[in-house]
Image (cartoon, rainbow, N blue to C red):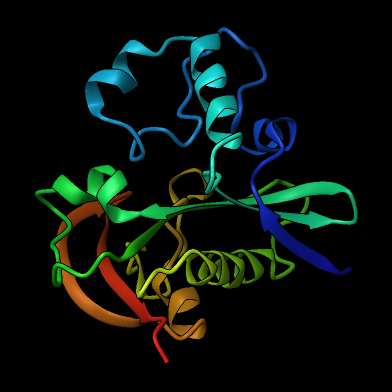
Length: 191
């Protein structure tokens, strides 16, 4: 298996990874940290997908996709922190005022998990941020201490995967998800 990671500019492929089975459903579409809470609450059903379709046509697109051949098998949301809710978070601290990028969602399709695709997605997101001039990239993974994490709540990733990718612990947070604390991990992209 050869995995290629590319910018998420093909809406149909993004929908395969983060869209609902029913277009009327009000699922995340990976918008909850990307847009203001009021807009997130206002976008209902098909309007959520239409908003994401618009993001896929922008530069930079809303993240990266992992492909096994032509099949989309993974997604990672990555954008400038200033353009996300992490810019205003009360639970995830700012380490400094550097215009860092945030990587907050890593998702691998069922049937493709356990094959290293999340590692490829993290590496691809790092390269995507670097190519767009990010001085550093942050992630806010679960610090599960090796404990099993429910797959549906593992979207921010786990600390060990980010350490493996070269990220280092930059700060503790007061955010807890699925019973696990989240930590702020950072990778400097300069030099």
